[in-house]
Length: 421
Image (cartoon, rainbow, N blue to C red; front, side, top):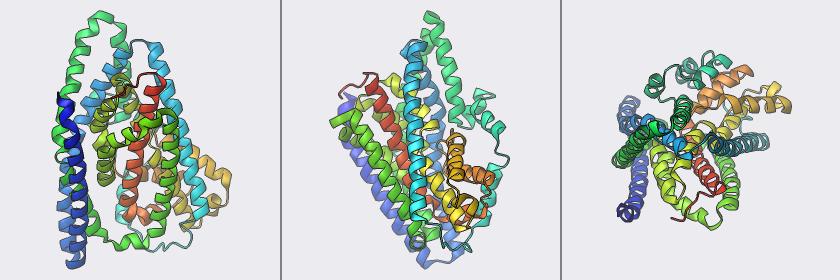
């Protein structure tokens, strides 16, 4: 019965999110043009509180939903052979998509050369120092620590999705192995997943407010003028994303045929939330719900989607090559701009260092800062693009959501587990 009430509510939520976005832009523009910088700062900080409340409400349900759905998903897949097969297909998709995104970004940034002749005096160093703290000492050791949890409670507390995935996979496999004794736990976690998905419905009512706050704060602080100054960079990045979308949708069409438009309609709300809050985490619970409604088997969704959040961030991948090459061009670092082999090595390093950065706004910049340092990119370069990063972040996050939805649908189809909803 519940299903029949959903569509009008869904389309209304998308509409309210768009209204929140437009009102946020208008409010931000008005404040930016009519008030002093100290008032603008106060307004931005307070508007951002709305977004913080929304994102925190979502973050509080990320750990239980990833744990419950992934464990139940593995237990329902039934045996290690199936887990390995589905996981293998998912990883094949993720690595191919990541390489295409990185490669496309690299080709386009070499053609457009957005960084050549950029004004490098306009650098926000205070914000860079904040990011530098996060990226300090980025190494293989740090990467391993980032992947393997020391404590599942710590991983849940800090919303480390990749660590949660590692623990949940082990837990799910062990639960399957003990057979009958594990059934009460599987049933309990299944119920937990349903409760958390119900919470998602309530939290999503706050999405338009979160979106309003995010837009108002960004525009009040930077004004619309920033888009003109960096119009070339933002425009070329979005052109790159458009080409990536065409590629992704083409591959998606090969798998899904005429079901593709249905999928896009289903994920329109998650994509609009992702675009306006610039956080992939914000839409994870809603995306789980919509993928199941689309007809993907819930055990495939519960398994592939959390993995995708760690390994399949197509928009972020493209942005990393774009941002790092922009910095190299702006500061005229010929060791990178003039050496294709060096660029390809950097691309492969990004492929590894970017894993598990899911969901955190600005995470891509932390990776660019950390990985760029290995190749002699100045941290000031990140300061150069920080101001407009929020506008790029919106596009790349929306692309991440599209990439993960397509991957999940494609693996379901591959497995013969896609029902017509």
